Image (cartoon, rainbow, N blue to C red; front, side):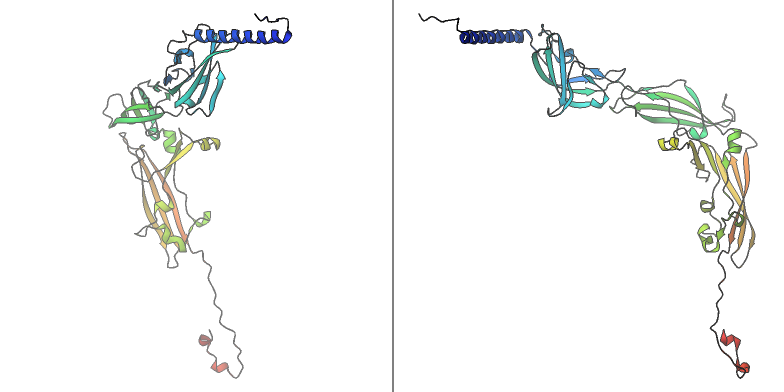
Length: 375
């Protein structure tokens, strides 16, 4: 029998390496057997109702909640795009999804680690992300009062766990104009509206229906007498009179001054929904023209009477227009506003002198000189 000399340092080193590899292989095989990761496919991750997030755990993705990996100390997760090319969340114990991940699918790599952070086993699966929490409309109190200019812009408050831009929809309404015969509703109430709302978030979740009784209120005395404005005078004294050459452009087919050109009365009111640009400019007021199109819900009507002061052949013209703004309500007498607007047309074109050509005459031609022929 051939004897092996174990005192040879080189042989001893090689044998130790073989033994180490055998032990490592045995240990890895044993650990792998003790750490089986049975991952389900295409898991549906639902974001939290509270803060619209989801923290990834092994219970979400392993069919046995990780029971087949008894030696695991913790799990780590890496989220990638569906094709695996882009790492969206690097390998970490604390992988958190938010509303930006709604949709999918995504690829997920799961690693089981021991306490020394060694990887025991790896699994791969796919998942998508959904928000299942519907928006919530603040529907109390049941009855609200709004100004007439807020009738079409009033919406109750709404909140959603994921979507800051929830779509609030008016689904139906019934309207009753107040004739002062409805118990409990005085002349300050223009109309009563029963209106139903729902809210829909970006994931298509629909809120419960919110029913509101809306009391539409008339303008306050301060608004009626202070916030209704009338068109400016167009007069020579203010340097804004209409010139003769433009006069026809300011008139309608009947030859009367068109208020669409010379101005209508208008109401200035508080804007409940200013744009960011308006907020930046400190412009939180809106304007509505009282042009009798009956689209403005404050029951205001404008009428006028024109009196021509003079009309001269050289196009100079002056009209005194008396405006009346009346509020239609069940109160008698109805409130009204009066204002006079003066409209002037002035000849602003300077005269032109046409000089005849120069001629030389002598004493011999005086009797023959004709000034008409000379010009």
